[in-house]
Image 1 (cartoon, rainbow, N blue to C red):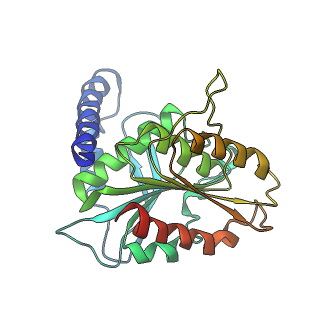
Image 2 (cartoon, rainbow, N blue to C red):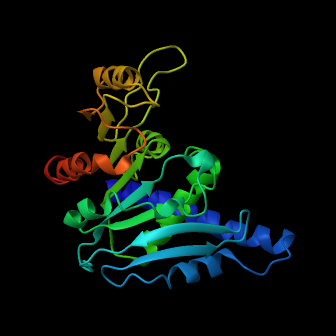
Length: 265
């Protein structure tokens, strides 16, 4: 059922792509089309075990998507590989290299043999239309071109990327099977003050010493959404700084084990 629903999402964005072609042909002086973008994506090097930093040309502003692709060491052409969509933190001040900060999660993800896509936020929060559109387009192209197990697609991120993980998990439950949010602060309450249920399972890691997002606030929002039926594993990391993301590596490894042993069984 998840694969069928995901297919509907893919079809929607296929129509979006083709529709953009016609519009861009009418109003844009450039000759680059979404078909050119799709063809260029298909040329990305996914030789097993390689890391490729991509600048993908697109027809509309900002005219490019920058992202990193990490290919699994073993590509499963029959059953497909998991896909991890990884979002960096500090989006407001993040530069053109921010999406290359994958060193804290790479080793842990080897155990699930996943494709990893790490996009640049273009200095915008992950919940903006621009970044939602980017996510949908890139994942659509990945599913078209690579052997992806669409039942094993995961959102993850740190700080602002952790908030983006919550957002994608809540709003795209038919795309993502799980989310892993680190050092995040995501309001799970409605404007009326009641808690919202999030359908996608989440593994949430937060430090007792987080200087930017106080533990008590995150823990309160987590507890309230759990109370209305959300499936969340909440882990308190002892004494880690918000500004040292690689110190969370051991906890991230536990989250990857949770994917294998709890979510994908």
